[in-house]
Length: 164
Ligand code: ADP
Image (cartoon, rainbow, N blue to C red; front, side):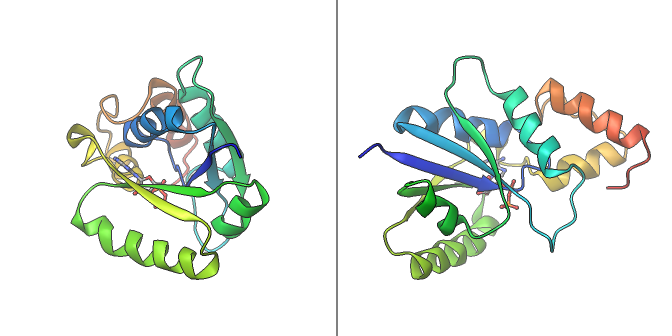
């Protein structure tokens, strides 16, 4: 059976932290699916389609990764896609509790799907999409935090007066 994994998240927007996890994890599987969440209870800077496109545009050429959108439970998507693994990234202790709770919840929903947690590279441990938006809002430089396509997309969004 092919080894498949899904990497779910908001990706609002894609950062170097996300990209690092994707690049390190993709070669370990036959297929990696980056799953862009469209949760109705969250408000986003970018639409789901825009977030997915920014993920696609940020990926290095030749890296075989699928990008998909989903608005349900990750375990349901994983089951349908025959993926046995969920990938999550961990930055600091502050991420731990949430990731632990989510992994346990997913385990109780579907015991066959395993959550694998990958530690961030230390140089990316301070990067979070929320912080990127905060910095952008105050006119700070994003070039060390997100790919160039994302820098441009955030600037365009802010110029249009979209609030963060
Ligand atoms: P969510 O809203 O599901 O937390 P995010 O887009 O914020 O979605 O994050 C998706 C996944 O990527 C999460 O597992 C998160 O911990 C991880 N992640 C986010 N930023 C980084 C980073 N800088 N380094 C490593 N992992 C990260």
